[in-house]
Length: 310
Image (cartoon, rainbow, N blue to C red; front, side, top):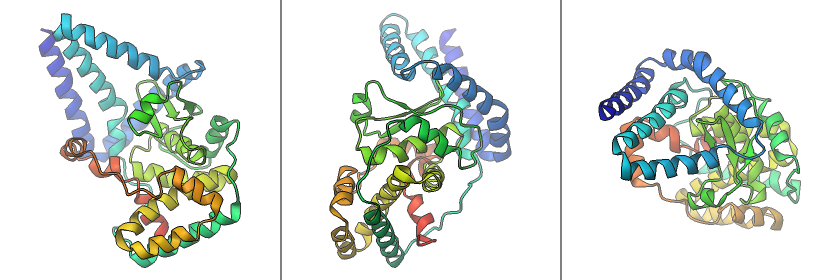
């Protein structure tokens, strides 16, 4: 009986995102009627806790799942299907919202070079980076400067045990099950402000990674200070990654023009390393679900900026 219930929950959880894909108006209505109030309630509840609730809850669920796999596999299947249902109902529909910012399909090497030069000049002029003491509170104020599909109701939290984030190569994460935006406090300081605002964009219902990057960039630039510098630094990293693949000589020339302070922060973000290869298994699953482009297109920010040549 539990196997049948688990299969039914899993099947229904797959059908709902498919319906949102076919009828984007359904995703938009669902976001306003269900996602926004539930996310707000979860964020308010989690906000009363000084540490991220997602971390201990994940450990408890993992332990429970291990026990059930050895003692009650039917119950383990039901638990997994319920977790998937939470994802499908509280997060997956947001991927099918209409795009908020138009992104050009192609960017030329000349545009990339001009973008990298503009970002380099702006970063060099700002000098050394200083991480704000009240990063979470300021990130929340910065995020309020852009419009999102759902309200952003809580400040981002630093992970209590960031080792798991480093193991998964994550700078930040939005946990829809608890309504929390998390960031790695041990990550390079210059990247943290933009990452924190990026995760708040997810809390606001912007699921597409490229659109979240664009919204976070706009918010950080409007807010100014360390947030504007962090946004420009991430944008430079993405732009330099793209430039390196199209014109290695131009990439080296741009790298040479970075000031010592900016170069140190740029290297800390992995800017001098070749772009990481995608996980093939994950990409295959995402392509099957029609989400690969929306989940992995962080560099959409580059095309959006290059069209404006900031």
